[in-house]
Image (cartoon, rainbow, N blue to C red; front, side, top):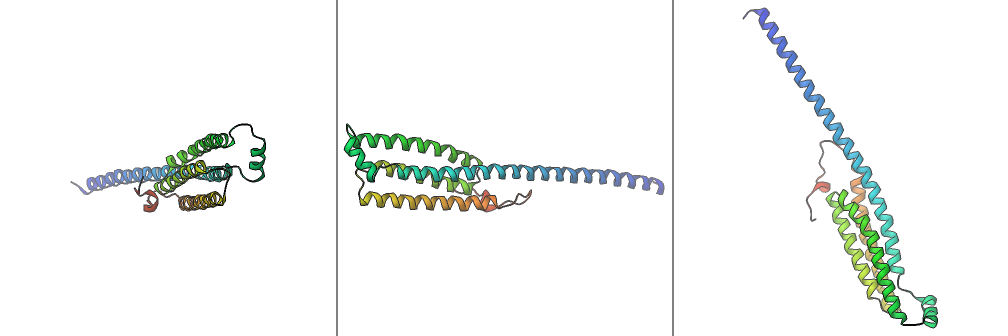
Length: 193
């Protein structure tokens, strides 16, 4: 092989090699951009779902705790209601709590679908707390006494604690910027599902 042929071969190798490296780097950059764009979209979806769940949670807990009638309203009902007031009240609480639980379930499921696992676990805590709240409200007997008010107060405290746990997990997820290569172990771990 002559020096001229060696130069041509070396130039061809350089052109082909440089072209392949350029294609690889270009594909890598496009893939990274797509990953970041998807993570930004998912982050927006999560933010929307998390805030909707928090708003629904606040409304649902408030409604559940206010379901059992008390005070002047209960006194008025006792004086004017024709029929079994306690049975009618318990049936009303049962039906309304079922509707509240169903409305909240839709928000919980959306958040569980969007994840990640750290939020899913906090969402399960919210769901369990909601179920416990519904059962607690359904167990309340009338007329409300001091023990019932104390139980409802404790229910509010448990609901607030579950909300705080969810908020902390959601905050951690939302405030982690998207990156094409970084995996956040705390966010992507296979914790209990």
